[in-house]
Image 1 (cartoon, rainbow over the protein chains, first blue to last red):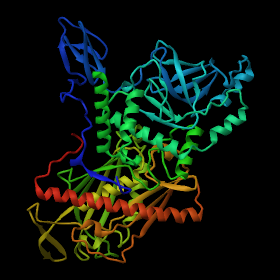
Image 2 (image 1 turned 60 degrees about the vertical axis):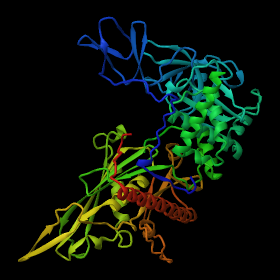
Image 3 (image 1 turned 135 degrees about the vertical axis):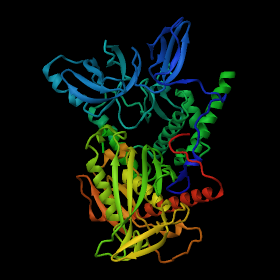
Image 4 (image 1 turned 180 degrees about the vertical axis):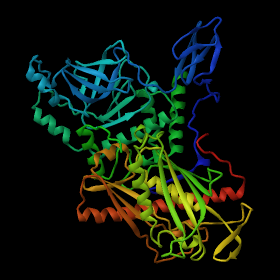
Length: 299
Length: 308
């Protein structure tokens, strides 16, 4: 990508598939017959009609003994207790915030399940409720943990730990939740100097690593720090990471810290970050990353 | 466009990025995201094109009809734009939701094409004062991922470049009325000259600077965007390029969107930036169209459309 504009023809379209063996798994479409009813049980993503098990979503079939499930390719985030999520505050309500987390229903963050900045203890008072908007307002991004799941599937979050809370300057990326690999830790300080939160809900947050500011510091100073411009080098690394993640997502590869870091290292052979927007380069990076992941698996 | 919620700190990050001329995906302020183009996708239209820019997907079809020229311009043909916002694009377009946006875009196009230096309507004349061709340009917005105007104008230009007009074989004068015989052979036609057709460039003002091709996040950071229509350069659209040294792209229309205001100095800079962006857009579009035409000549073209 040398000029400012690239227009490619449809005949030059890139196929982003990087599967090592060229056979794709069998996809089922909604309404497609999977098997007869005789000796199978229906699981998630299926229904029974005319004595046949049919798929109710588009996805791949999974069979556990006699249970048949279809896992959808794209779906909203289905939360589980203990998941790390990144969400955006939509509304400030009575004693709680409404948070968008890419699940079917908006999640809820109770005022009673947050830690105030500076670790100061909260007094339950009317004043305190009126200060809610000072703490988190509409549009703010937060990282949180799923505390519990309500009967309708909506999530209740908590930020009762120093690692959770409001996010400051950085970039948010939205990917399919099904591409996030579940790990013990979803907070990473990458060796390239960027902190990344890979939310289970498919929201990925990138920001420069904090220069260990002391939490007890004056609140004004923290706010001042938030408004400082980010250095060009950090910005460049973040843009590169963002484009690398986009490349992995285009090839439907699982995301965790190692795959993202591999992609980042492979992308360094392209000097200019905007080159990484080119579909061919994206495929190249995804392919090289897949190769490195495979070689690690073999060892 | 749909209001996207952003936190103040995210906005600051984007703002500083624009000031540094380094945006969140590594582009500079005059870089476009990669696009994909295909012409001749609708077999029953005289000319058609499909353009995909990030998540914006546009399908354009050109239909030709014989019409009577306007009495004040007897030697000119007619061109008419119609934009349809499909409810597939975003749920907001359902019912009459997309009507205002559609009217805005078609008015913008109409104004940009309304100059003899932008698009030569003389080539649509059949018989002066009696009959002319009328082009109906139908634009369908299939997916809406921001930066609609630019994508629409590129797709329209590609479709016009692809448009074929049948030759008139014979004309019969019968009293005052004229009767035509058109050639039955579908290959017996002339191609339109669309080299000078204008392109629209949206410049989104963020801070003191303007960016082209804003992402949805960037769009929600700006309060005003300028749309400039810049005429094309025909040298990019023919192989045996006739170099016209003094050829200058001209600005044929300017529109503004949004509640903000622009200082005169910023305004001037923005238009200059728009001309530079339009020039590189024009060059890339011309190259892509010529390449596609070359491919068509070499072998039977396969249509890809939305699949593959």
